[in-house]
Length: 339
Ligand code: ADP
Ligand code: MG
Image (cartoon, rainbow, N blue to C red):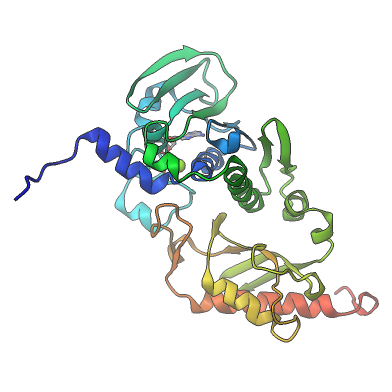
């Protein structure tokens, strides 16, 4: 029989990292979510070569105290939950304490951070098998993290990366979703030096949609504002005339988190039955707000899938919210009146 042994820490780290960091866009997702959780009002993302050689995320959030920085890079180290009960009501995007450890296992990282109100900041460098270093450094309040040469030490992973343009597009896609999920934050995305996205951060979902999808789509939108069984549904859906050839513009957010939800998607399309052609799809940007206890976000390492304690109320809320938006939107303007 072969001998069973516990893997060396370095190898175990690489395996665990694989679950969180699949490609450059997974790094961006984790870093930007950290910036959102930090309370930032401005977040800038810069990438080069599809993110493979260079990804930098800068925020003006709470920053990290120098003594906490090395801990932040340890696996299962987080400031967001403390007790088992906290898992029942997660109000932040992160909580697993895995992202920084995973990213540092497969890339070179440099973190520059100054905690709000602190006199000075610090610079941390590490990544791969490199011994980390920490030194005092001047910098603005907030955090900048630079990730270089993703998968430099894991050639097997590197092989699966697609062309720079494909990886860059995946990053752009993730940023669109995050920008739509937080209209109160101004997001800026620079790809190989060119600005690709800039949301104003004026806390209006319509402004974020305009920045992400452009004027033409914006002009087809109908507002949604509805509440059923303590589930609030707010945002916009496309008028039937603004239907799309595919589902790529169906966006659902739960408590500020972008998610994939079959239930919500089916409810949306059900509400359009009879008003759009077969083979065309509605678009939407819908924010669902419900009690934190009603959703389990701890299902998927990337947290794209969530579990609802009960799916039926989600279906009903989305269905009726969309139906009533369509009913109002269908009325000719001259006949509408204000209450
Ligand atoms: P998680 O987000 O699940 O807590 P991470 O590995 O992503 O785990 O981050 C570890 C910790 O580092 C966070 O809990 C947070 O305290 C701190 N942190 C990471 N990024 C930032 C940031 N941009 N601003 C402030 N704190 C940060
Ligand atoms: Mg995180």
